[in-house]
Length: 578
Image 1 (cartoon, rainbow, N blue to C red):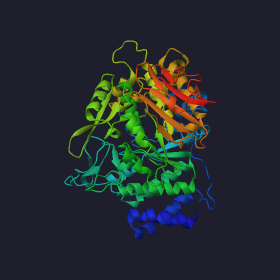
Image 2 (image 1 turned 60 degrees about the vertical axis):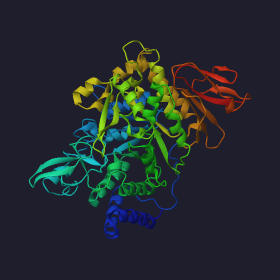
Image 3 (image 1 turned 120 degrees about the vertical axis):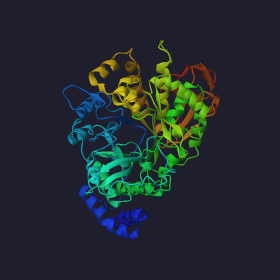
């Protein structure tokens, strides 16, 4: 793309946001930011494959692993280089900036590394063996951020970076992810002011109607790319643009901001990835692909709760119809899903809307409460509270309700973790899920946040000791997880873009056919979601001429004629041999 073509596209985005006249004055400022960070590439675009079957993402905090005498980021590098090099291609490093609350998501300086974690040199060294994914926390800022302090004192920069709202405004249509008040009162020399705070009293929303805010975040985005980010996650981006009288979610201006970012990255850093974090119902979520000119990747948010329900309730009656619906979706070129189960947040429940009836959801949530979980709520536009998020260690979510020895706990859990490896897209694994980390009730007590139940920080030596003891939970899960990831990376039918088809299977069994892009390889990923012995007829997959091989376990499957016999909670990856 030439500079002229880039200008045309940028002017189009800016005009949609601020009008043609203001767009013309903003364009030179955008060019100044580009020149500060990255040289515009001219001529033929370099074609860089964004992903293949060897790609998977590890999600972690900068201080998830700590060794004595080392900075947390250096500790993390030591653990990853020793244990996970060649297993994961990318590390999603959750916000590593100075912050005041929410474990990093109330950012007080978007351009600095939290000195308690390390410095930019540590980030650079972490990226020696892994691609890096940074968070762009662009919806809100901490009350401790200089911009907010300047807003309070009516100074620049920041005077107009905050959204002031009269408490008399009708905000009843605003879609909320929380049950906390939408407006937060602020004491200033000018008097008490009410400002927009979607998520908490310490997370003050930024005013993108002021183009200077957009320029700030273009600068920050390009700085992250310059400092080594291969991918950028747009945190809570669905709520970015506000218009009183609207839902203030998924507004056209929000989509336009993302398209502007995508235009910049496609030209300046071919192969870079934009990931949108929009924890909403599925059709709303995939709207962020648009025509292939917006997000490169979206989370498959419906997957974690659907997997949890299917295994714990012993039925695929909700998982299979949803999986079949994916077959009707034609993803734009250069777009894919990020498939996951556990993350630093809880299990989102809004993505179940329209998929799982309330009574079935209530049954599942009651099961999770009995396993030590919490359920956070959100306020609806009708003024009612609805379940928003389940907070529990994904490992403990599959435990028995009592303290008795549960012989099937690990099997249920490993089934849940293998399912995302089978679906179309790229798998992402939370570091605490990799180590079978249980609930952390002391963390909840210490922080007062229910999300802390799944945010335990590990002493590196302790975690390594548990991993190396074969009878511990971590010792059973960690090496087996890595083994499965390594096998997956060698199967080209698991390319993120490879077609997917749901097989006709009895209730309680999920079968997926994946076909390599060249059509030369097929794998049938079949999952027994129940605690029963099951036999599944696979004659329709290729008749009696095939000799079948289970690539996941590297054995010939247990068969009786045309039927594969499954142990409880077993997965097989069937491939034909001859």
